[in-house]
Length: 443
Image 1 (cartoon, one colour):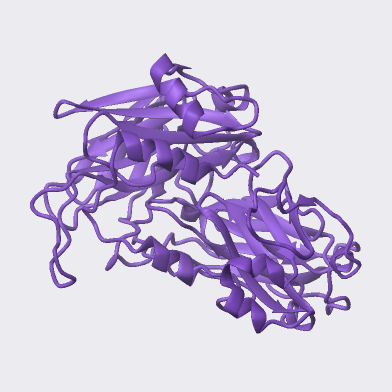
Image 2 (cartoon, rainbow, N blue to C red):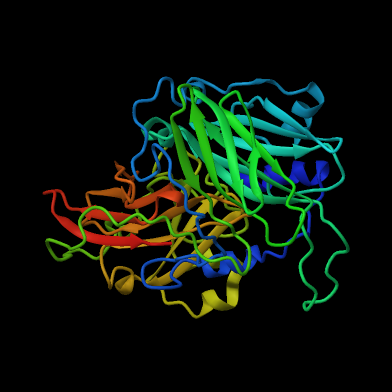
């Protein structure tokens, strides 16, 4: 198990202490994204934003497919140049990834005498971006990752991974709950750019902000100047003037949910009822996947717990086990029956787990899925969970017309979806190709 964000955050906290410029209760977001919080899933009704309307030659409603080079720089390695030796050593000490990934400097931006660095690295078949600031003011969690599978199937010009991350503050910090939040001194938005992109502009509540573009990435440093000014969308331009606009979710209290204007795609109704509401290998206690310890779980799981990597090239994993998977919540575990099945996503920030009686796990259908995000500024949501033995495959239908097959291994699935392409429809098929389960994520 490769637990990315806590390790990256540990280094960032040394370089840039966390900012309290904007109140954002990420623990509340995680609580609202708890497995089983509603029906078969968790819909993190986290703080999100509305799209400032804009028209481009190629909006997200029809992804750009006639790309010249696309994300080839990231598919064949990690672009940029080696980070300074002192930075690499600090990275290695804080982040012990298999294979000893090299930290690469992609670009830097100078603002008000401060230098904002955007780095990249790869682990397994996942590429990650990380921001560091050469100042005493910080920005909280600054790392985000995208799988190479996502890059290969994408027809976009840019993939924003984080947006509106606050660095520093203007004025005194809030002292009581009634005090208004302070104004961020800087807001950072960054992501991956196709090789042919020559210009990236971030549309904000105060006009446009030109981002730096280099080495297959972009970084924008916006000075809001007042409360309530946020980045709302990203406009990417290639040679010849062709453009694409990507809306941004703003994860700040009081901001409305992002409305993309797209419609749900794919089948909406099932074609046959579920017949096997169970996970056979779990019932037989077969050792699928890897052990809890090999999957990165510590101080728990004295019973039967297995960790499944639906995509072996990704670090996202799903833990499936008995009630001992909830060992950190002993009083709650004591109330659970012996036929309990617990399921949790292992990702950046640890593991979040929920449990149900084995007979009720699939009481509303063959897809027991959760979705949501954690961490400031995330522009990608994670879908995870389990499917019953009836399900042979799961396909993802996005609002912009994209369709692809989700990773599914030993009944477990975990993958990312770009928030700007919602709504997303997740469709389960049996081995005869019939629709057996449907979930729609509207955001």
